[in-house]
Length: 116
Image (cartoon, rainbow, N blue to C red; front, top):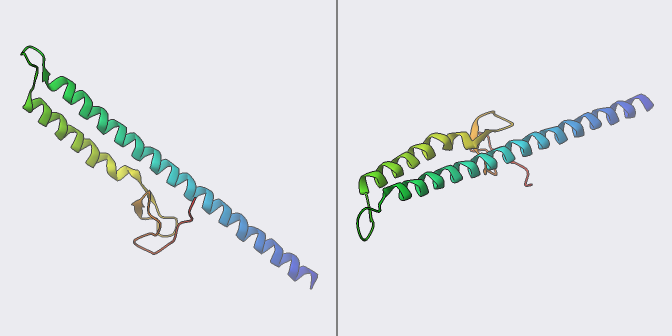
């Protein structure tokens, strides 16, 4: 009887340890996704700001905006956003498919993520 309870306790300890590790991994992935999304937003805003500055023609009075430079810069910002948006996702711990970093439930397998 003593051996069974020791074995059960060891099994429970292993289950708790694996659950804690899964939560830590999930939190690390979520944090990484949030950091990537923030960096992407900063990059896009910087591209837009630089584009506006470069599009201003100071040789005229009053200064005017060059619409071609403005459109090219906005197109570049959109391309950067669309290209890098995919990288702001992480893998579901249950089915290993890419999901948005802010998902509460995996859209593929229904796995629920713990709130942090």
